[in-house]
Amino acid sequence: MSRPVKRSFTIAGHRTSVSLEPAFWEALADVAEARGLSLTALVTEIDAGRGEAAGLSSAIRTYLLAYYRKGGQP
Image 1: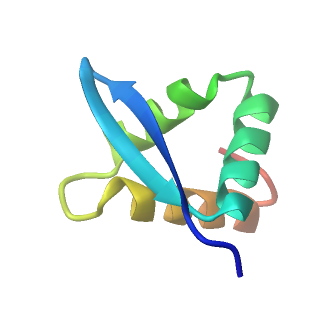
Image 2: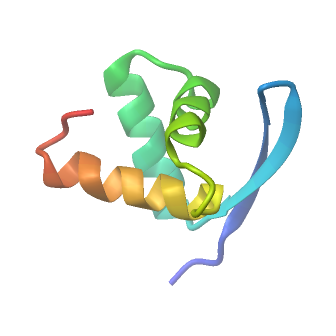
């Protein structure tokens, strides 16, 4: 298994870092492209819907799981 890769984003004017395994980064990029969004826009959307309980990395993984379970529907 590959080691997590850290990337930084600016969300709501704040800089944040997210660590995900390469397969999750690839899936996230695929979903962003399919939805016509930038990676930052999709991460911002996921962040806005995650609530306070989950970390952003966990929220992204959960979003991707739900997305693919629904057959690629947002």
